[in-house]
Length: 114
Image 1 (cartoon, helix red, strand yellow):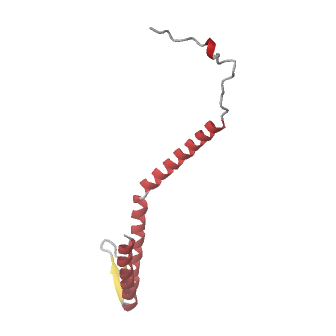
Image 2 (image 1 turned 90 degrees about the vertical axis):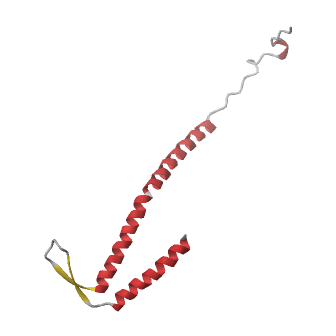
């Protein structure tokens, strides 16, 4: 997948830069409901849209990865909680039965046989 991204991104970037360098003529830009017009070079216009596309793509990737980041955050908290619990169980003193509490074998009740 990395190679495919590289194969697509590099030629498109080279094309955009060559387009911007080659086209320095001025164009007049206007947007229908507004009366203002702007004169700018085609290269500025093209590079502006290239930058806008880059930032919109980064925004979409960031939004799509939010779910994964939330799962990672939740699992990290769960892991920390379980590690604390394990440490608490490991540091708790173990209770060993004293010899007085275990009856000798001779005094232990025998099972009734049929």
